[in-house]
Image 1 (tube, rainbow, N blue to C red):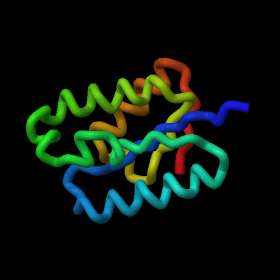
Image 2 (image 1 turned 90 degrees about the vertical axis):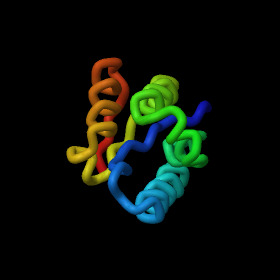
Image 3 (image 1 turned 120 degrees about the horizontal axis):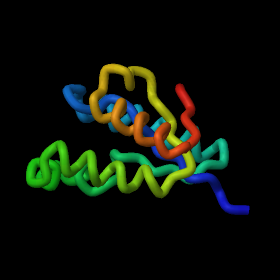
Image 4 (image 1 turned 45 degrees about the vertical axis):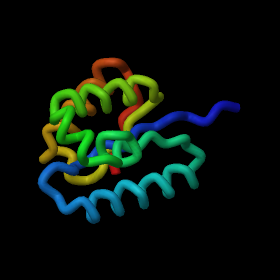
Length: 104
């Protein structure tokens, strides 16, 4: 049986890198323990290499993240997503395309 693919979404901009990296990593471990295959934006190229984020900028990075989201079966929303412009966009796209939405 194929594992369900889930995307983690939550606040990142304006937060200390160490804080959101730990939060996303802990969530990834928890979701994998629940049997999901996980896509975490913290593991994608623009987040892993800050120079690439500076080169692409916010809009292209969000578009890149949305492309990864569209490969998934659902989205897992971390607490605080309501204050994140990117997370609100990711949730709206997931809802528009009928992906499962799970709130933390």
